[in-house]
Each structure stands twice: as structure tokens, then as C-alpha cells.
Length: 187
Image 1 (tube, rainbow, N blue to C red):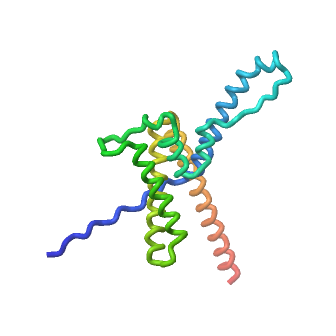
Image 2: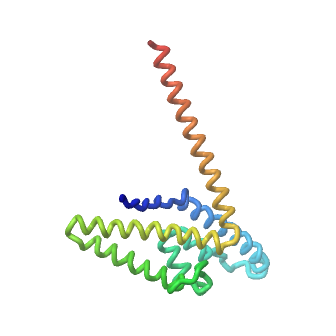
Image 3: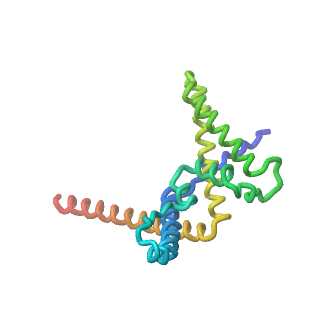
């Protein structure tokens, strides 16, 4: 009797994630900057020589980094790291799980640099790649679940990006068809 082989799950992918993070960081900084400028207008009148400098919000600053750094900042380094929880009971907290995966990632990266044999390099590279997927999913999950407005912002931006992509593909096809018709007309 043949044993059914378990199908390997498809690698998860979050489309346009880096673009979404960058634009969301700009969006929240834009709002924060507008509020800060408004609040400081009164101060500017009473103290005209005080230089006003806007510093990006910590979240906006974090969002411009890698998913691994986003996870570290949100789940490990943040004062609110204990606010994150799994939807089902587990033996470790979110913070402990992310911390363990950060350590595993750093160990695999170090081993990859130091390893001389290609077979082992392949294993370490696979571990690094898998953990990068994990950090991508974890960062997106946290932002969607815990940050008001992020999910809607990300969904809208994804729709816009897909629309642009569809328009580029349609334009490219049209150009190719016109070239083909031009060549056919020459014959």
C-alpha cells in the first residue's frame, strides 16, 4: 500500500511589503509632523529663535528597516512586547518565540559564513531563508492586528500596485502587438 506523501505548503509571500512599509512610515510621519507643527506654532510665536526639528516617530523609523528588525523592535525591544499574544496557548510567549528565532537566524548566518562545505551551506541558507519568511509573516501579522489603519492602508496600496502592474502589462502587450503588426505590414 502506497503512503500518500504530505504536500509541501506553498511559500507565503506578502506582495509589495517593503513598499507598503515605506509608504505607511511616510504616512504616519506626515500625520505626526502636521500635528507637531500645529502644536508648535504657539511656541514659535513666544520663542521665535527656538529651532524646530521634527524627529520621525519610532514606528515610522522601524518600518524602514528589515522585517527581522521590525520583529525585534516590536516583539522584543518594545515596552509593549508583552501585549502581543498567540491566539492559542503555547509553551512560549510571542517575545520568547521571536527572540529564539532571532538567535537561530543569527546563528545560521554565522554558520553560513564560516562553513566550508557546500552541502552544509545549503542547509544554513535554507534555514536563513525560512526564518526570513517567518519574520515577514510575523511583522505583517503584528502590523495588521495591532496597528489601527494599517490593514486598510496595506490593502488599498496593494490594489493600487496591482492596478499599476496590470496597466504596465497591458501597455507592454499593446506595444508588442503594434511592433508585430508593423513587421507583418512590412512583409
